[in-house]
Amino acid sequence: MPSHKLCLLHALINLLIVTLCLGACSKRVDYGDPTATETLTIDFGSTDLQMIAEKMVQSLLASPTVHQGDHPVILVSRVRNKTDEHIDMKAITDKIRTTLVRSGTVRFVADEVREEVMQELRYQADSGFVDPESRKRIGKLVGPGYLLMGEITSIRKKAGRETDLYFKITLNLVELETGLIRWAEDKEIRKGQKRPMIGW
Image (cartoon, rainbow, N blue to C red; front, side, top):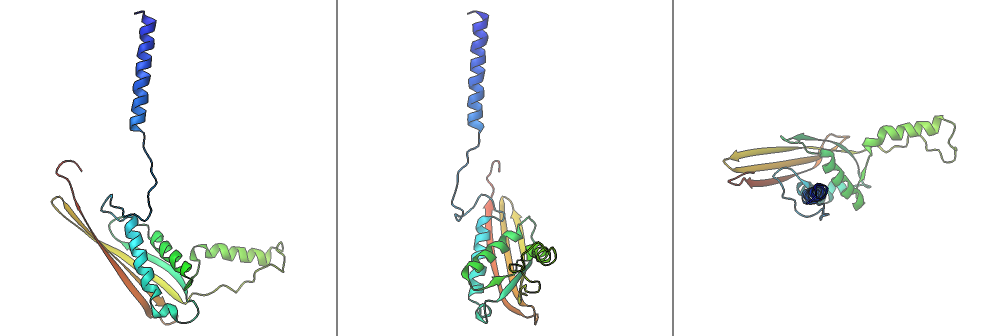
């Protein structure tokens, strides 16, 4: 076989091998049910977040404090992460807050954007560019009556190939005027994992 044909044949074979390798190595992405139970690892995951939010929301909605007066106003404080892993605590409080707001039973102060709100109010009042008829007045922000705060802790134990992981999250609703805890709830989660004899 002539050398130029042989080179062309080698080039085609190499191209075919590269194409097959790229196809075999490419990642496949599938959409899944966000509420399905997630058990990829023992670490804190989306199912844990959903279980915590569900328990806390149902408990708070059943609390007498929520049903007293006219839709209590709540400020979400920080929920401290006292575990040995990174957990997005804001994701937990956001999930709880969103569900509670949708219930129409409680109201929340938008603490994360409070500075932006104040800047906009000052702009409307002082810039001279905003029509006085549509200008929003300073001094009308609603003060929260309650502070939602808490913490999450964990205990991780290993024995041989087995790992036991225990999470506990506790939330408290503190009345700002009196400092009294008007509602408290906790949620416990225990997960176990057994490492295979070979590999991970």
